[in-house]
Image (cartoon, rainbow, N blue to C red; front, top):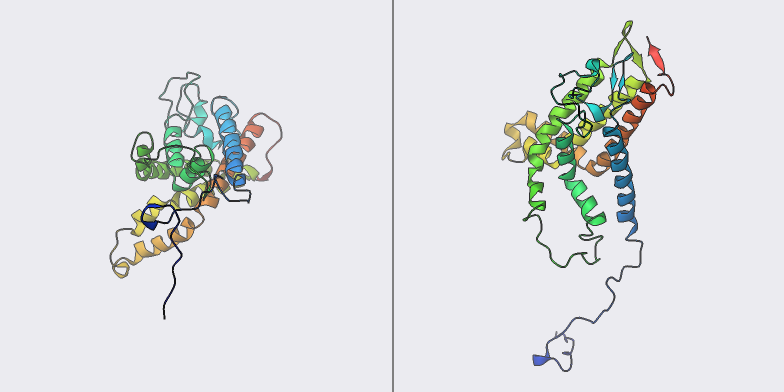
Length: 273
């Protein structure tokens, strides 16, 4: 049995074959631009809200129920309300310094270097590339080998900081069960707890956490506890993208609820005390 090959292109040296001359930048006819656009709108709106709230320096603490918004945790500047400063006030109270200045840079680093967020803002803000089968918006490409993208390698270290910050947020949620009459429980507690649970799910679903849990194990059978933890983290890792967006939502919701209570827009719905 014999096969016949396509004839060589006429006029090319040695009968070499050439690609088809296509003038269009992409042949995609679907709305490939929609996902990057939604990412720009979503992240842009969240960043705007978070920036305004961080530098507002107000409406972050509810004295009656010890609610502290995660945007101001831990509150460590001299302008912090003393009762909200669970770890002391060690930084100057200048307007340009966020009240949670010790943790916000690490949270920002953890999010910026997250594997999912890299894809999100590379495609939406950087256009590198904006979608599959769509040309890159830059003439050259060096990957993550040069400044500033070489800093993405700090993700594994930012993960450790994110764990510590999640512990602090958990402590804030525990302290919020105090009321003027002692133990108290209200809608605000559910909001704070829900945010903490989602933050832990997002943090533990991190690819670095999965690698730490079992990435270097050669024999899972010899490490049953780490293997079990690795399987749990792996299941969370599948939902890392969804958790990344969900936690942006829970952070904004928690902050807005605490702000509303602190500004006396409405009262907290109390179940106990």
